[in-house]
Image 1 (cartoon, rainbow, N blue to C red):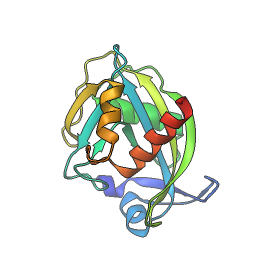
Image 2: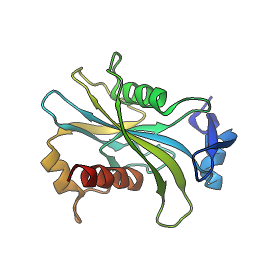
Image 3: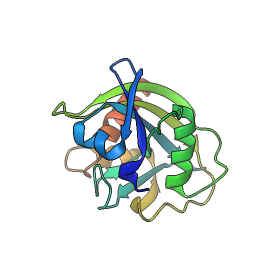
Image 4: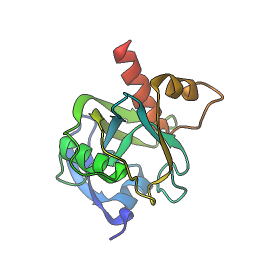
Length: 172
């Protein structure tokens, strides 16, 4: 079964499940679903940053300061956060990511929308990101991430950037 065949819960504006559909259909029709964003920090408090592969269904080749992804049908946000963090970082035995806050992401063109939950986790294990998910990665100091987010910096996934801006605003 490919990624496009994965079954996702379809949710309403209040994050209530109203149906299920394959990921490919959810993306093609712009159906609202659920996602998790996990900010991974190393022992030196640096942030894991990566560039997505060109083969990704959504936002190929863009940078992201979160690991994460869609929440599978019947899966909780907490379960998805741990699963996605371990998968994308290529580790096992991570502590349970700490839930920080939910938000409804809506794309600038209004065609995409998903309920999102932002988490944070400490990863002191050596990372081995999935080659099919991650084209490049590094742990960067927070100041470097902030510099790369500014205009003229790297091109970031829009939903991750929205989550990051909300996280920075909450910590300001």
